[in-house]
Image (cartoon, rainbow, N blue to C red; front, side, top):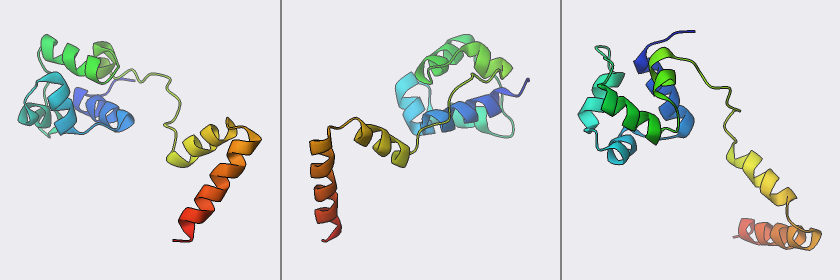
Length: 107
């Protein structure tokens, strides 16, 4: 499946939960330039920018340019993460955690 650089960049930003401002800060690419890649008049960045963007988003230039979506698991929700971490606690720590949560909810 081939999609545009704009669509692929938007997908990766959303997947990684990174804002344009954060991407700009991480890559040194001006905010407005990244905005332009996401706009209606989008274009493909020069190779050095594409490499910096791919690195910051932990993906490849090929995936950004060609639109090959990685087989990534869906992003874990806060609830799912909480359950996963809770299940790793000992029985005693789980009981303590539950008491703490109950105390917080009584506020």
